[in-house]
Each structure stands twice: as C-alpha cells, then as structure tokens.
Length: 227
Image 1 (spheres, rainbow, N blue to C red):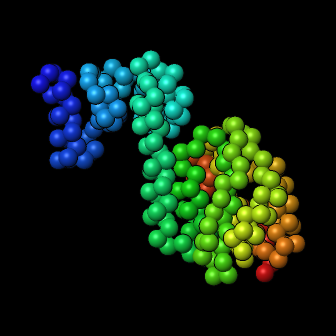
Image 2: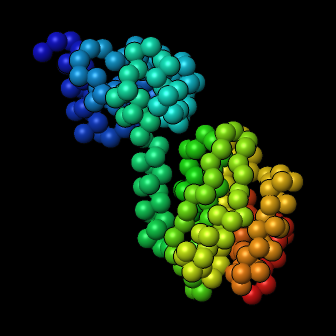
C-alpha cells in the first residue's frame, strides 16, 4: 500500500468512526475526491478548489462547468462534487415532505428554503395546495441567469390548473442573499394574484429566499388574501 493509499484509508476509517466532526474543509473535500479519483494525492486539488471558490460552501455550490475550469478536475470529479448540494436539497425536501401541510407561514417558509437551497441563479417555483392547505405538488417554471427570472403568467396558470389547486404559493430565490422584494417582484405578485383570482384560486403568499432567511410578502402586508 502506497503512502497515498494509506492516507485515503485513514480518512475513510476516521469518517466511519467519528463522522465529519473535526474534519477541516480540505479534508472533507479529500474524502469526496478519493471516490472520483482512483489513485494519487488529492490534497493539492482540495486546496486548489478551496482557493478558487473561497470556501467549502463555494466549492459545493459551484456548477460542474465551473468546477471543470480548475486544472485537474475532470467530468467525473465535477459531477460528483456538483451532486452534493442537489442531494442535500432533496434530503431537506424529504424531511419537510413528511408534513406537507402549509397552513401557516412558517411551514411554507421552511419548505421554500429547502426547495431553493444552493441555487446560484434565480429560480421561480409554483406550489399548489388543496382546500386543506396540503401540498398537491410543485413545479419550477423559470430559471434564469443571476438577477434575471421571468415568471410567465400562463405557466403559473397552467400549473395551478394541472394540479386542480385551490390555492397557490409562489416562491423564488435571490442569489445575492438579500430576500427583500424588488419593485418588479411586487408588481409581478400583484399581477399573479389578479390572474389567479380570475380563475377562482387564491394566492396565499409569495416567498423570496435569501442566503439565510426567507421573506413572506403576506407576512409583510404586501398582499391580502380573500377567500
């Protein structure tokens, strides 16, 4: 067994015994990288990734194409690293999905934060609820470059009709980190509310997800619901 093989084995054994507690950021990356690179020392590449993207969070949130700009990162490595946050997002959605009732703002905020976790571009989702406030389903209807998302009223309407929704929650993210709504966000929300009301449906809320918190337009008095 070579020196690098011994280091790989020690990392795996340490994780099995202790979890990730006590692992430095570069060691977390090394542990992931050894499953993408069959041989060799992955320590220099782990440090190069951290230097390039600034933090472990930055590395894990980078897209595969961004990761592949780093020398030594091939398709398999980029795919494995790029898979991490989407898997976390799916896991958090599963936890929230255990209680799909969205009868209060806090439940809706938690669900939207899990749904939009880690996206580096703006994404717009429509959440469709039944008469009891239970989630029937959700659909991502738009994804744009940083700061550019266009919510198409027709797609919102089609999604709500397809799920036979009684009410709807809109949500999107601000990759800048600030969840405060823009004038356009508010204008779009008012238009969507009128559209849904004309279809006999209720717009319950429009949630904007930032880095560490979510903003509820209903909670801040920017829309009123009439059932």
